[in-house]
Image 1: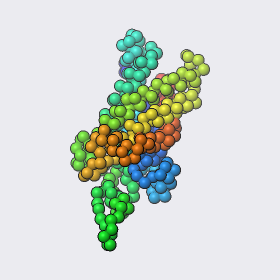
Image 2: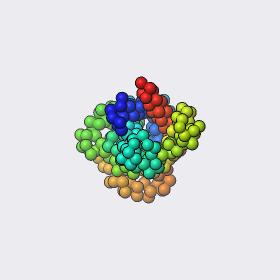
Image 3: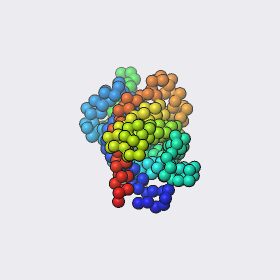
Image 4: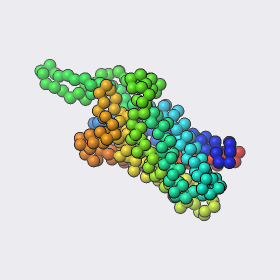
Length: 316
Protein backbone atom coordinates (compact mmCIF):
# COMPACT_ATOMS: atom_id res chain seq x y z
CA UNK A 1 0.00 0.00 0.00
CA UNK A 2 2.82 2.41 0.81
CA UNK A 3 4.89 3.43 -2.21
CA UNK A 4 7.33 5.81 -0.50
CA UNK A 5 7.91 7.50 2.82
CA UNK A 6 5.81 10.53 1.93
CA UNK A 7 3.42 9.19 -0.73
CA UNK A 8 0.84 6.62 0.35
CA UNK A 9 -1.58 4.95 -2.03
CA UNK A 10 -3.95 3.73 0.66
CA UNK A 11 -5.14 7.33 1.22
CA UNK A 12 -6.67 7.20 -2.27
CA UNK A 13 -8.27 3.80 -1.68
CA UNK A 14 -9.74 4.90 1.66
CA UNK A 15 -11.12 8.03 -0.02
CA UNK A 16 -12.75 5.83 -2.66
CA UNK A 17 -14.53 3.74 -0.01
CA UNK A 18 -15.65 6.79 1.96
CA UNK A 19 -16.82 8.51 -1.21
CA UNK A 20 -19.01 5.62 -2.28
CA UNK A 21 -20.70 5.57 1.14
CA UNK A 22 -21.33 9.30 1.14
CA UNK A 23 -22.93 9.35 -2.33
CA UNK A 24 -25.61 6.84 -1.33
CA UNK A 25 -26.37 8.79 1.85
CA UNK A 26 -26.32 12.28 0.35
CA UNK A 27 -27.72 12.00 -3.19
CA UNK A 28 -31.47 12.37 -2.41
CA UNK A 29 -30.93 15.70 -0.63
CA UNK A 30 -28.41 16.71 -3.29
CA UNK A 31 -31.18 16.35 -5.88
CA UNK A 32 -33.47 18.57 -3.77
CA UNK A 33 -30.66 21.13 -3.36
CA UNK A 34 -30.01 21.24 -7.11
CA UNK A 35 -33.70 21.64 -7.98
CA UNK A 36 -34.07 24.48 -5.46
CA UNK A 37 -30.99 26.33 -6.70
CA UNK A 38 -31.37 25.92 -10.45
CA UNK A 39 -35.06 25.27 -10.93
CA UNK A 40 -38.13 27.43 -10.58
CA UNK A 41 -41.57 26.84 -9.13
CA UNK A 42 -40.59 25.53 -5.70
CA UNK A 43 -41.84 27.55 -2.72
CA UNK A 44 -39.49 25.99 -0.17
CA UNK A 45 -37.61 22.80 0.67
CA UNK A 46 -40.68 20.87 1.80
CA UNK A 47 -42.62 21.88 -1.32
CA UNK A 48 -39.70 20.74 -3.47
CA UNK A 49 -39.53 17.35 -1.72
CA UNK A 50 -43.30 16.78 -2.05
CA UNK A 51 -43.34 17.87 -5.69
CA UNK A 52 -40.54 15.50 -6.65
CA UNK A 53 -42.24 12.65 -4.79
CA UNK A 54 -45.68 13.28 -6.32
CA UNK A 55 -44.46 13.70 -9.89
CA UNK A 56 -41.51 11.29 -9.98
CA UNK A 57 -41.97 8.93 -6.97
CA UNK A 58 -39.08 7.97 -4.69
CA UNK A 59 -36.88 7.23 -7.71
CA UNK A 60 -36.91 10.94 -8.54
CA UNK A 61 -34.60 11.58 -5.57
CA UNK A 62 -32.05 9.13 -6.96
CA UNK A 63 -32.13 10.52 -10.49
CA UNK A 64 -28.62 10.71 -11.90
CA UNK A 65 -27.06 8.72 -9.03
CA UNK A 66 -25.36 6.05 -11.15
CA UNK A 67 -22.92 8.59 -12.56
CA UNK A 68 -21.98 10.16 -9.19
CA UNK A 69 -21.64 6.70 -7.64
CA UNK A 70 -19.11 5.77 -10.30
CA UNK A 71 -17.40 9.15 -10.60
CA UNK A 72 -17.63 10.87 -7.22
CA UNK A 73 -16.03 7.87 -5.57
CA UNK A 74 -13.03 8.44 -7.84
CA UNK A 75 -13.29 12.18 -7.18
CA UNK A 76 -13.24 11.71 -3.38
CA UNK A 77 -10.42 9.24 -3.75
CA UNK A 78 -8.38 11.93 -5.53
CA UNK A 79 -9.39 14.66 -3.03
CA UNK A 80 -8.57 12.73 0.15
CA UNK A 81 -5.49 11.10 -1.33
CA UNK A 82 -4.19 14.44 -2.60
CA UNK A 83 -4.92 16.24 0.69
CA UNK A 84 -3.26 13.63 2.90
CA UNK A 85 -0.19 13.30 0.73
CA UNK A 86 0.10 17.09 0.37
CA UNK A 87 0.10 17.35 4.17
CA UNK A 88 3.00 14.92 4.36
CA UNK A 89 4.97 16.68 1.62
CA UNK A 90 4.51 20.03 3.39
CA UNK A 91 5.67 18.53 6.71
CA UNK A 92 8.67 16.93 4.97
CA UNK A 93 9.57 20.23 3.31
CA UNK A 94 9.07 22.43 6.40
CA UNK A 95 10.14 20.16 9.25
CA UNK A 96 12.17 17.42 7.59
CA UNK A 97 9.69 14.75 8.70
CA UNK A 98 6.53 13.81 6.81
CA UNK A 99 4.92 12.61 10.07
CA UNK A 100 5.36 15.96 11.84
CA UNK A 101 1.98 17.49 12.88
CA UNK A 102 0.74 20.19 10.54
CA UNK A 103 0.27 23.75 11.71
CA UNK A 104 -2.93 25.66 10.91
CA UNK A 105 -1.11 27.36 8.02
CA UNK A 106 -0.02 23.96 6.67
CA UNK A 107 -3.61 22.69 6.82
CA UNK A 108 -4.89 25.82 5.08
CA UNK A 109 -2.39 25.54 2.22
CA UNK A 110 -3.05 21.80 1.78
CA UNK A 111 -6.83 22.38 1.84
CA UNK A 112 -6.78 25.22 -0.70
CA UNK A 113 -4.48 23.31 -3.07
CA UNK A 114 -6.89 20.38 -2.78
CA UNK A 115 -9.81 22.65 -3.66
CA UNK A 116 -7.98 23.93 -6.74
CA UNK A 117 -7.08 20.41 -7.86
CA UNK A 118 -10.62 19.15 -7.30
CA UNK A 119 -12.12 21.40 -9.99
CA UNK A 120 -10.32 19.59 -12.81
CA UNK A 121 -12.14 16.37 -11.89
CA UNK A 122 -15.23 17.74 -10.17
CA UNK A 123 -16.50 20.24 -12.75
CA UNK A 124 -17.47 17.66 -15.42
CA UNK A 125 -18.88 15.31 -12.75
CA UNK A 126 -21.04 18.06 -11.25
CA UNK A 127 -22.18 19.26 -14.66
CA UNK A 128 -23.44 15.85 -15.78
CA UNK A 129 -25.00 15.16 -12.37
CA UNK A 130 -26.90 18.46 -12.43
CA UNK A 131 -28.06 18.07 -16.05
CA UNK A 132 -29.48 14.64 -15.18
CA UNK A 133 -31.02 15.83 -11.91
CA UNK A 134 -32.75 18.74 -13.65
CA UNK A 135 -34.57 16.42 -16.04
CA UNK A 136 -38.21 15.99 -15.12
CA UNK A 137 -40.54 13.43 -16.63
CA UNK A 138 -41.41 15.99 -19.30
CA UNK A 139 -39.25 18.57 -21.01
CA UNK A 140 -40.64 22.03 -20.38
CA UNK A 141 -41.25 24.15 -23.42
CA UNK A 142 -39.51 26.99 -21.61
CA UNK A 143 -36.25 25.03 -21.72
CA UNK A 144 -36.75 24.36 -25.44
CA UNK A 145 -37.36 28.07 -26.07
CA UNK A 146 -40.81 27.51 -27.60
CA UNK A 147 -43.55 30.11 -27.70
CA UNK A 148 -47.23 30.05 -28.49
CA UNK A 149 -50.64 31.49 -27.92
CA UNK A 150 -54.15 30.21 -27.40
CA UNK A 151 -56.82 30.02 -30.08
CA UNK A 152 -58.26 33.33 -28.90
CA UNK A 153 -54.94 35.06 -29.44
CA UNK A 154 -53.99 35.34 -25.77
CA UNK A 155 -50.48 34.42 -24.75
CA UNK A 156 -49.95 31.62 -22.25
CA UNK A 157 -46.95 31.03 -19.96
CA UNK A 158 -44.19 29.03 -21.58
CA UNK A 159 -43.51 27.09 -18.39
CA UNK A 160 -47.01 25.62 -18.52
CA UNK A 161 -46.42 23.70 -21.75
CA UNK A 162 -45.23 20.13 -21.44
CA UNK A 163 -44.09 17.63 -24.04
CA UNK A 164 -44.42 14.16 -22.49
CA UNK A 165 -41.92 11.35 -23.02
CA UNK A 166 -39.20 13.55 -24.48
CA UNK A 167 -36.00 13.55 -22.47
CA UNK A 168 -32.87 15.47 -23.30
CA UNK A 169 -30.47 12.81 -21.99
CA UNK A 170 -30.92 9.05 -21.87
CA UNK A 171 -28.15 8.64 -19.30
CA UNK A 172 -24.66 9.83 -18.23
CA UNK A 173 -22.83 8.63 -21.37
CA UNK A 174 -25.44 10.17 -23.68
CA UNK A 175 -25.29 13.38 -21.62
CA UNK A 176 -21.49 13.62 -21.98
CA UNK A 177 -21.68 12.81 -25.68
CA UNK A 178 -24.39 15.43 -26.26
CA UNK A 179 -22.46 18.13 -24.41
CA UNK A 180 -19.27 17.36 -26.36
CA UNK A 181 -21.15 17.46 -29.67
CA UNK A 182 -23.04 20.69 -28.99
CA UNK A 183 -20.64 22.61 -26.74
CA UNK A 184 -17.22 21.01 -27.19
CA UNK A 185 -14.80 20.05 -24.44
CA UNK A 186 -15.18 23.45 -22.80
CA UNK A 187 -18.86 22.66 -22.34
CA UNK A 188 -17.97 20.02 -19.75
CA UNK A 189 -16.25 22.76 -17.71
CA UNK A 190 -19.12 25.24 -17.74
CA UNK A 191 -19.36 26.69 -14.23
CA UNK A 192 -15.77 25.69 -13.38
CA UNK A 193 -14.90 29.28 -12.43
CA UNK A 194 -17.72 29.36 -9.89
CA UNK A 195 -16.58 25.98 -8.65
CA UNK A 196 -13.09 27.40 -7.99
CA UNK A 197 -14.69 30.17 -5.92
CA UNK A 198 -16.66 27.52 -4.03
CA UNK A 199 -14.03 24.82 -3.48
CA UNK A 200 -10.84 26.69 -2.56
CA UNK A 201 -12.35 28.27 0.58
CA UNK A 202 -14.83 25.39 0.86
CA UNK A 203 -12.20 22.72 1.40
CA UNK A 204 -10.35 24.93 3.88
CA UNK A 205 -13.63 25.11 5.84
CA UNK A 206 -14.00 21.35 5.47
CA UNK A 207 -10.68 19.87 6.55
CA UNK A 208 -9.71 22.48 9.16
CA UNK A 209 -12.94 22.25 11.25
CA UNK A 210 -12.75 18.45 11.01
CA UNK A 211 -9.22 18.46 12.38
CA UNK A 212 -10.14 20.90 15.17
CA UNK A 213 -13.26 18.98 16.22
CA UNK A 214 -11.40 15.65 16.16
CA UNK A 215 -8.69 17.09 18.42
CA UNK A 216 -11.30 18.49 20.81
CA UNK A 217 -13.18 15.18 21.01
CA UNK A 218 -10.10 12.98 21.55
CA UNK A 219 -9.58 11.79 25.16
CA UNK A 220 -5.88 12.70 24.91
CA UNK A 221 -3.42 14.02 22.34
CA UNK A 222 -1.81 10.66 21.56
CA UNK A 223 -4.90 8.48 21.06
CA UNK A 224 -6.94 7.99 17.88
CA UNK A 225 -10.40 9.57 17.85
CA UNK A 226 -13.34 7.25 18.55
CA UNK A 227 -15.56 6.40 15.53
CA UNK A 228 -18.39 8.39 17.12
CA UNK A 229 -16.08 11.40 17.42
CA UNK A 230 -15.05 11.02 13.77
CA UNK A 231 -18.71 10.87 12.73
CA UNK A 232 -19.63 14.01 14.71
CA UNK A 233 -16.53 15.95 13.63
CA UNK A 234 -17.03 15.01 9.98
CA UNK A 235 -20.71 15.92 10.08
CA UNK A 236 -20.11 19.32 11.67
CA UNK A 237 -17.29 20.07 9.22
CA UNK A 238 -19.54 19.15 6.30
CA UNK A 239 -22.38 21.39 7.48
CA UNK A 240 -20.03 24.33 8.04
CA UNK A 241 -18.37 23.91 4.65
CA UNK A 242 -21.60 23.55 2.66
CA UNK A 243 -23.42 26.42 4.40
CA UNK A 244 -20.57 28.86 3.74
CA UNK A 245 -20.17 27.59 0.17
CA UNK A 246 -23.87 27.99 -0.70
CA UNK A 247 -23.68 31.38 -2.52
CA UNK A 248 -20.95 30.15 -4.89
CA UNK A 249 -22.74 26.81 -5.19
CA UNK A 250 -25.94 28.57 -6.32
CA UNK A 251 -24.02 30.38 -9.08
CA UNK A 252 -22.31 27.15 -10.14
CA UNK A 253 -25.58 25.19 -10.22
CA UNK A 254 -27.35 27.87 -12.26
CA UNK A 255 -24.58 28.06 -14.83
CA UNK A 256 -24.31 24.29 -15.16
CA UNK A 257 -28.09 23.86 -15.47
CA UNK A 258 -28.21 26.58 -18.14
CA UNK A 259 -28.79 24.58 -21.33
CA UNK A 260 -30.26 25.28 -24.73
CA UNK A 261 -29.33 27.29 -27.77
CA UNK A 262 -29.79 30.64 -26.02
CA UNK A 263 -27.79 30.92 -22.81
CA UNK A 264 -29.39 32.87 -19.98
CA UNK A 265 -26.01 33.58 -18.33
CA UNK A 266 -22.97 34.92 -20.20
CA UNK A 267 -20.56 34.29 -17.32
CA UNK A 268 -20.11 34.26 -13.54
CA UNK A 269 -20.53 38.01 -13.05
CA UNK A 270 -23.57 38.15 -15.32
CA UNK A 271 -25.14 35.23 -13.46
CA UNK A 272 -24.59 36.96 -10.10
CA UNK A 273 -25.98 40.32 -11.29
CA UNK A 274 -28.94 38.80 -13.15
CA UNK A 275 -29.86 36.55 -10.21
CA UNK A 276 -29.62 39.46 -7.76
CA UNK A 277 -31.69 41.82 -9.90
CA UNK A 278 -34.47 39.32 -10.59
CA UNK A 279 -34.68 37.46 -7.27
CA UNK A 280 -32.84 39.53 -4.66
CA UNK A 281 -29.97 38.69 -2.33
CA UNK A 282 -31.87 35.76 -0.82
CA UNK A 283 -31.38 33.78 -4.04
CA UNK A 284 -27.76 33.14 -3.08
CA UNK A 285 -28.90 31.29 0.02
CA UNK A 286 -31.42 29.12 -1.78
CA UNK A 287 -30.95 25.56 -0.62
CA UNK A 288 -28.84 26.56 2.39
CA UNK A 289 -31.02 24.56 4.80
CA UNK A 290 -30.74 21.50 2.55
CA UNK A 291 -26.97 21.99 2.37
CA UNK A 292 -26.73 22.18 6.17
CA UNK A 293 -28.86 19.06 6.66
CA UNK A 294 -27.34 17.11 3.78
CA UNK A 295 -23.79 18.12 4.64
CA UNK A 296 -23.88 16.42 8.05
CA UNK A 297 -24.69 12.77 7.23
CA UNK A 298 -22.85 12.86 3.90
CA UNK A 299 -19.60 14.21 5.35
CA UNK A 300 -19.93 12.17 8.54
CA UNK A 301 -20.18 9.02 6.41
CA UNK A 302 -17.32 10.18 4.20
CA UNK A 303 -14.87 10.81 7.03
CA UNK A 304 -15.92 7.72 8.99
CA UNK A 305 -15.50 5.47 5.95
CA UNK A 306 -12.15 7.11 5.17
CA UNK A 307 -10.69 6.90 8.67
CA UNK A 308 -11.86 3.33 9.37
CA UNK A 309 -10.52 2.20 5.99
CA UNK A 310 -7.16 3.81 6.78
CA UNK A 311 -7.01 1.96 10.09
CA UNK A 312 -7.81 -1.31 8.36
CA UNK A 313 -5.14 -0.81 5.68
CA UNK A 314 -2.56 0.25 8.29
CA UNK A 315 -3.11 -3.08 10.06
CA UNK A 316 -2.43 -5.14 6.95
